[in-house]
Length: 519
Image (tube, rainbow, N blue to C red; front, side, top):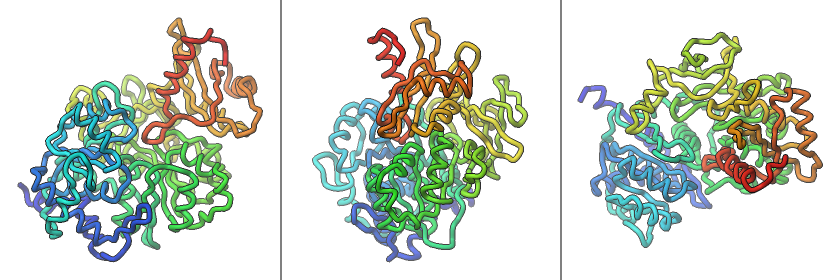
């Protein structure tokens, strides 16, 4: 072991040092329960010792089946402290999909939220694991909190090495063989550096999305700055607005569909949101028209982050860039981060000039080590040190990147390509449209047809023909949807993205049962 390895400190140890500086400070809040920094730090140390006593250590996999509890973060920290890699399951996947992941990552210990014990029983029947540890008393497994309480709170020595795998994250909606993205401990330390430090006052972060996704990174960053993390179990706009006012929230992360629901909720008009300093959104495409609405509702506090689990952070659109006088900026995903290289390439791998559409390719120290146990798939996306993101977009002369589609979502029609985000932006710019999702569906002749599902403003009288006419006039017949369906809300994935797989499945089912009449 090199001297560097011996001196290496993980993101967990760095965060625990910060927590130790002010042990009486409130670090985590959940359903009225307030956990101090000292209590949380002691819990992590006790849990780490309990895991070691159960035979869970460096190079083992700990899988979390857990909601947004303070103990969820403590369990992740404890596992990483002893050098184990952590996989956090999305709670809304099916038991079959969860079991496939549990099996695939060679889970040594499954750590379960007491609220998910029934699901844990289903999963472990399909994919047995050596240890089932529960964050509290339950009919299933062993109570990890009880085991931890019997241990010393003295800090155990961190066992992770820089190149060990820290996390395995699965891309949402896993089907077939799970696609696990491996990040090392060294990379996990760098992820925090992407976010600007804000030393001027205390950060108070509201978590309304799963800790398995971006909110987990941001919670780590908040704790690293000595701030407070307020945990909600799930996104509810009324609950979120009340928490912003009650807890004087400064920071939030949301996916765009949730941001729209937050600002459209009737309570938004009379809730004091003046404490907000950073309202970060990302994870899927945003509508420039709706982001402009959000700026008018919440003020100059919006920040967009563009990144991928495979790539880490790529670009940020700062609050200053959210300028209503420059609406074209709101179409961009942000300015490429200083420590990241971005190239836009055609299918043959040739670099394209600024303004031309191609695949976004990224090179940085944050790029994943590879997909877990899938060298062929890794080799497809990681070539010569560059990660091929699967996103289509372009760069401008000032270093801003704009994403127009995922390669797999782009619709190939007679006459060319329809970029779904461009059509969604156009539909969303109609004053009576709140949100839309555009996707391709193959007809009986295997030709792709453009389908749109639209969420209208309540009480509006907008119809499909009006929207088709608008599209035809502004983008031409190629972009005109063959089918438009109206709905009260779009289905979302576990991460909070519009679920286009589900929308496509519903559309295909409608086409097979109906006479293919136009919607």
